Image 1 (cartoon, rainbow, N blue to C red):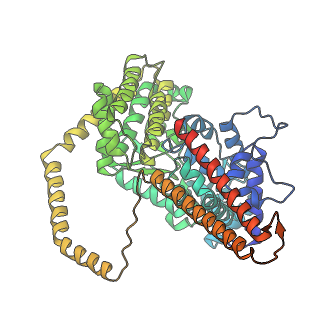
Image 2: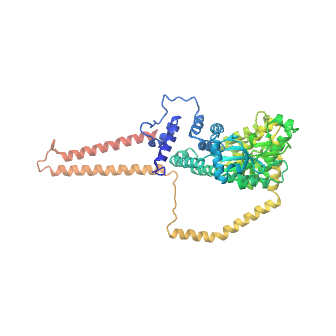
Image 3: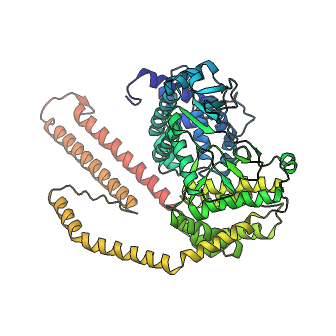
Length: 564
């Protein structure tokens, strides 16, 4: 069986297919063979029924499908919205609308989960616990509380059965992709199962609140010397996989202008300070908070910036930092060739067959960004245009890069609220220049040279062993060589055609000989027949004539096709 041999999985995947068909994707259901799963009454035709008229576009209907299927599919859509190498730009716009919001579960149940996880009655942990959640999502919800020692905290509590539901959904998504893998490959998505595995790992990390606690501790360690940044403290002794307790931060949202002004804090100063904090994370440390919407950036009364919600964290390796900085330096210098080179360095794979055409497209992007005013174009528009080129040239750029671009676009919007004249690119330039100087410094170049020499030495050292291993595999007959002959198909078809004609000719000759022999042997005997010809000979002659007629028709059609 295809779905873990269980009736439950068959029923769930059938429901999934029914939802897809309901929104007008009947062609997809039929072409992937999913139609065979449906009951006879639910089976669909290969094309959209006349009575089904949708006011929504195809991309909007994909979003509606994910909303109907539930939270796990919504999170999948949100993840895909950061993969422009896989998803076309109109669909990205729709997926960005997906909201992970669900009604809160009962406070009594939340209290029970806390007591079970921490092994204590709730009154021994908190002197105060707010029964009304301050936030709710598909994985869990958040409550205000005060610990016995007087610390004000926020408490994240995982939904009951959240893990079971998510794992069941992930299993179903994986089975669904296995069934439809060929369809996605033909559509240009060459590694659909790998994408599902990446999403699965990310979502399972969210199910473990220890992960977020570790992220908080890592940020507190990495940024302990940054005076303008404050990271809340996690209480590790009161944290489990299903309960996370974090220090409460008193402050206002970064875009709360009246409150900032009442505290004597200048909004333009906060805009510059906030962006610099993120640019340091991206270009200097390489570990950054990946969800910087205004609700996750708080300003304390003393002007310090506090970040909250560390469920989504991005990490850059050194080579990615250099290439990413190079993209923005190329943009500032209006250098399309350099930008093309840095984008290729960033990409894992690509389908750029014409580098000059790629550079022309990037030059158009640069000209629009640098010539038009800030009101007409910004980081968001730059990202949208870059996403189109990524999809066009199938650049497999790591998802973390688009997390950064998405973060910068959000920060640009927030900064413009604080300071309408704020220029994000001008603030990025110094970091890019510093990174490029670091990249070509004597220390880094010598390190790269040492690494290259070490790799070459390892290659030559291991080469005899590798060759010996290959020879052993050949001797054992374990090496299989797969070949594909390009342009051989027409020749093969021609040979097949000749072979078929030859076989038919032999059959016709055999039938004529059999008929002649039968007729000759019947001359001296009284054998039943027609017009003096035995029935057997007559049948053989008729079959031979019919096959000869088929060869004639086939030759006539082949001749017409060649002339055309």
